Length: 185
Image 1 (cartoon, one colour):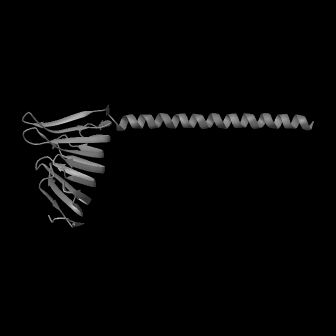
Image 2 (spheres, one colour; image 1 turned 30 degrees about the vertical axis):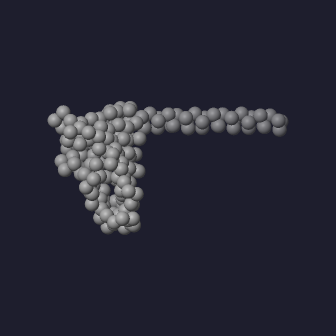
Image 3 (cartoon, helix red, strand yellow; image 1 turned 180 degrees about the vertical axis):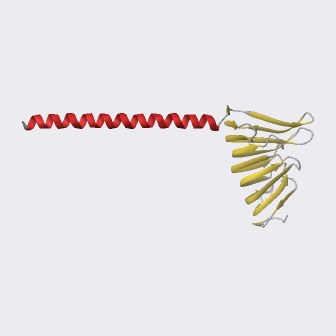
């Protein structure tokens, strides 16, 4: 009799466990479907390994590439993962490159907002490191409002809060600077 109760108890436990598992999997599947539907609603366009070229009068100004690009109707293009943005001067010659975790390109103004481990290297040897920058297309200026580290081609390093420069980092202004210069700047 005790054996019979044990077997019945085990069957009851097994049925209860299977029933709860089924309910759990069912809820999980419904939640997954909801997440997928919401994701599709949120992201209209997704492009892998995109290359975006902004030009003016047949001259390339910017060439941007990344792992992914997300684009919503009437919104900025969002570049995600291994963002590389090449800058070119008015005659089309390469002048610098920007690396970042992500970037937004406004399709109306062609302004660029880069964020996450932003690193700009000019062809002349200057480097800028910060967490977020804006490239203003109308003025062709790089602007950072956060903490920055700027290194000259001679190895001098300046730190500050706030930075403005042209796209090749040749004419720059650093705000609230701190640092040591070997020869003077």
